[in-house]
Length: 148
Picture 1 (cartoon, rainbow, N blue to C red):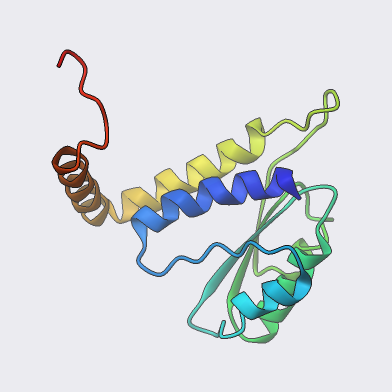
Picture 2 (picture 1 turned 180 degrees about the vertical axis):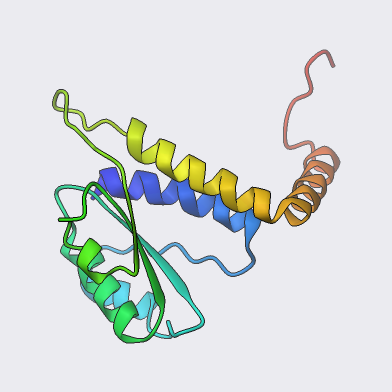
């Protein structure tokens, strides 16, 4: 679960800068998941990120969202993944374990490509967002300036 949540957190962070109504579903119990997605409907898109070991919470949430009419996108390791069966669109990235550490390279590369593609479609909105962020960062001295 930690593996998948790292990838989903990366995606949610950047999508939150691109879109207005982003909610990262993060919960410790199945009931919390459903409490967070209770009002999902046909106007929503839900992106499930699920790699081995597959989270039953994610699978159940994807099933619920699809039943409620939401567009369901799966980011997973294969078409045989349990969330792929629940998805309208499945994006796959291998997640081979080369040691006791799962590699995030392929899943993060896929998510990065998705973020870049979406941001290019919303180019002016993204440019305005970052212009506003730069102003806020400067005004509130969020970052140290080199050479000052």
